[in-house]
Image 1 (tube, helix red, strand yellow):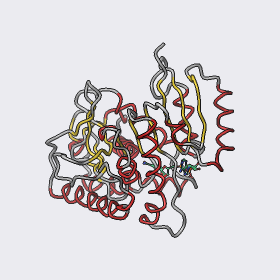
Image 2 (image 1 turned 120 degrees about the vertical axis):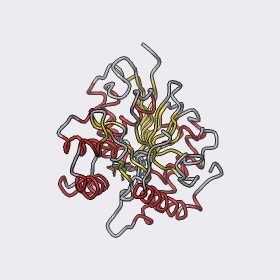
Image 3 (image 1 turned 60 degrees about the vertical axis):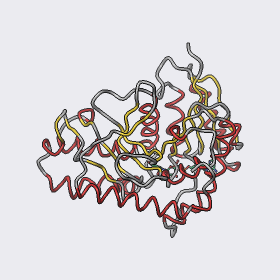
Image 4 (image 1 turned 45 degrees about the horizontal axis):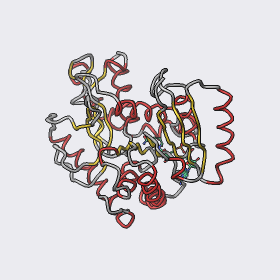
Length: 331
Ligand code: NAX
């Protein structure tokens, strides 16, 4: 058996953490032959709850799980991690707008960026905690030793939601939907790009003849799906978010199948689509044979798409402005 892969997770006692840990420990992330170690970070008051989760991990007797560290010390949790998944944060409370949430959560990512820089400079990092694009920018800015290519913010849940909507509308299985891009921010301004998506190898716009649905219903359904789940379930999307995080890490850790791509936010400097630099922006991404991620170039962008791509970039620039005092030297 190979050496264990270490995955560090923050907010490990939260809803998404709970939905994620057991799947990673059972081989659901790296496969049935890859041992894993976990580094779990929580705030001090949540360590008791995290201890209960540890007891359950013990009680699963997972053969692949070769060690768990549970702590309120970030450097200890991150030490020598191969992947760090930043899930922990403060949820939006009643009366808080997006800027309040950004200001409340920003400082967490200053400290965690520094801790990754010190304890796990070779790690790849996926930020899930919202606002995930801007939190990722803050953490990255405090980690000059960690290559910029190693930083990702999650839009995979949006991609998966978009694929499911298109598949249901077309009456096909989700694996028939490929080339699904989420452009921009993990927020209502995201652009789920059905115009470049394919269904069974054909343009989605050819397979789905109801263009009014594509233009008017599909995009807001995907963008507002999180709110719809909260309304129906009385709690936020935890299992599907955990699943998306695993999908995202996997897609960034293995070559992308020919003729497809995946969506994840990366640092926007030098992108081929005219998105301003200095942002964590979601693009169509292919992971190459050397496991580096690159933006799929030369996709058709019409005026409507351009407007949407720019609107999401504008929102991210405003978020960057809100946190400018929290940004470190690495951006
Ligand atoms: P929970 O409130 O259940 O869990 C968050 C956990 O983070 C708590 O256990 C809390 O103690 C811990 N925490 C708080 N501050 C911390 C710190 N400084 N260090 C370590 N841990 C800390 O939320 P949950 O439902 O698990 O959601 C977690 C985050 O994911 C939220 O920010 C949420 O908005 C975000 N989401 C992101 C999604 C995405 O697609 N990018 C979708 C799902 C989700 O909304």
